[in-house]
Structures are given as C-alpha cells and as structure tokens.
Length: 120
Image 1 (cartoon, one colour):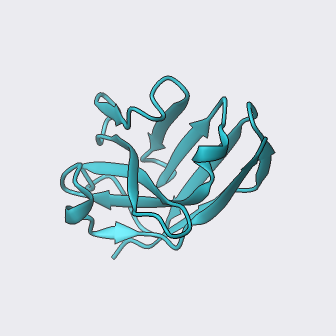
Image 2 (cartoon, helix red, strand yellow; image 1 turned 90 degrees about the horizontal axis):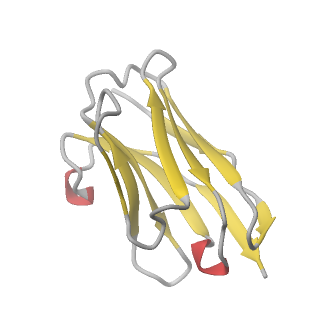
C-alpha cells in the first residue's frame, strides 16, 4: 500500500535546474516501473520519464530527452528527477507514479504533485 509524496519543485529561471524527489511510504522494490508525469494548467497529462526496478532501463519523453535524468534508490524507497536546461514549456505540476508497466493507464500508485515554474 505504497503512498508517494513529491517535493523539490519551485520557481527557476529558464536554463536553470531542479531536482525533484519522490518519497514512498512503503517499499518500491516490488514496483517494476517508477516514473514521472506532468500536467500544465488546462493541458492534458504528459508522461515524462520512467525507470525499471534495477535502473537498467530508462525511457524519456522526446521533449525532455537529454535534459532530464530519472533515478531510483530502492533502499531509500525514493525516486528522483534531475531537470536541467529548463524551459518555460516545462512548467507544470510534476507527479511521481509507479506501476507494472510504463503506461500511465496502468498506474497503481501516484502522488499529489509538486509545482515547477519556469520563467524566461
């Protein structure tokens, strides 16, 4: 019965960096995929990144590839998203999630989000 809590959001200038954290109330060792998605005001939910249990496989949305890095620490029951070279279009509420596949439609766990604002 894992619960996820995101943190690390804030206001950053374009080109800057932020590191988001996702803390789980329970073990994430048994969750194959942990990831992040985001949602901007009045826009549809957008998948951002995902990582497998051992971190061997990672996937990123084309819009963030090369700029964002996802990682997970199963011992700490935590997931992270390092965001570099931020752009105004990256502004959104970022959510951590977990599930058996990389599909957002298969999410079993998700948090309440952390707000990222990017100014130009």
